[in-house]
Amino acid sequence: MRAFYFILVIWLAACAESSVRSADPDNSVNKSGGTDSIISNLEIDRDNHWVPYQPKYLFNTFPTNIHTGKLVGPDFSTVDYGNDKGFQQFLREGLEGVPINFAGKFSIVEKSCGAMCVAFYMVDRTNGKIFSFPLEGDGHWGYKYQPDSELLVGNSELLNERMDMYLDKWAVEPEFYHWTGKKFNPLK
Image (cartoon, rainbow, N blue to C red; front, side, top):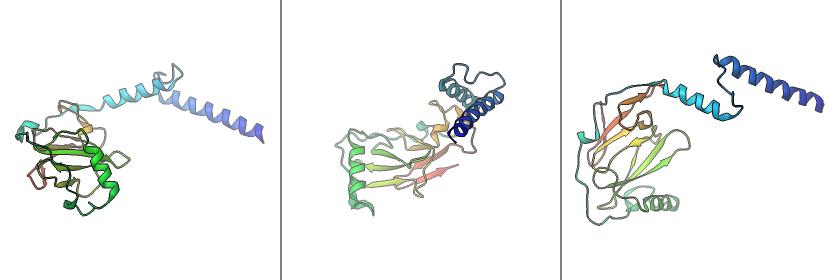
């Protein structure tokens, strides 16, 4: 029985190597025998999907002044789940050393859902009020934001740093939101 399993493992390994080589017409995958060549090949594949992108909105479209006074900590009475000790610890630790990083008076603390999505909590550093986004709780592919702008860019992992190239490999596009002081308005 051991001999059977040994032969099966050898055969499966040979089949896997053969299928990798046949799927790669240049036989560039695994030439070095390690995983680095596979990873670099995937990165090349990913780069082939970048296309020029011209966003309708930039951070300077919605400028704001940055609060320079004392920073206030979170007021947990401003959210329904404010009594949750785990949430309190998460938010306090997340705010340690975080300056105002959005819309002139907010500090954003991001929380991964464990997959390719992010939810975040915003604390108004002038009064401690806590806001969360996205309200539906499913998150997006990352966010970009700046301390001197009321613009929030969702699915920002699909954009390069200058926001002039877009990764269109998936059927997901960047999303733009304007913070009104009370809520995020989706921009079309």
